[in-house]
Length: 180
Image (cartoon, rainbow, N blue to C red; front, side, top):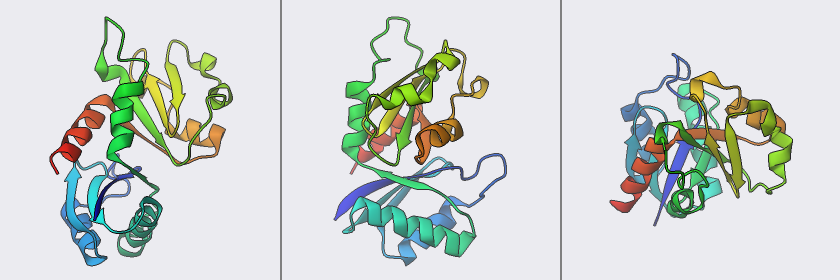
């Protein structure tokens, strides 16, 4: 049995794609997942399963549509993905570090470093971004609510599925993985 972390994009945000975590947990139990734990109301769900990550994501996405009627993209990541956030983030090394401005965009596929050119980051200065495999590290100069460098833009430019988490959430999700 392996623990998977499913990141659901766009649930319980501004009144859209609403679902209670208890109902989500029950739904996941009904399709065979075990040891289900959620973090916040924004779609961070740990499940234990014998299935591989892509199958877990597919099952969750299909069942959410069937039960709740919501088309919700799901990205499944591992503990190692979260650990690499801490190891590889270029923005953790600054002396005036403000983690409230740090975010990680988890991407549905592995990107090449050259894909950063496709994002045309210079348009978003002073915001910064850096690609690392299936993650894009983002450092917002002012904050996530004051930028156009957001998930929908990244998805459109790179033709991928993206869900973004703030640094506090990434930190807490890794701690939850370690509680297993």
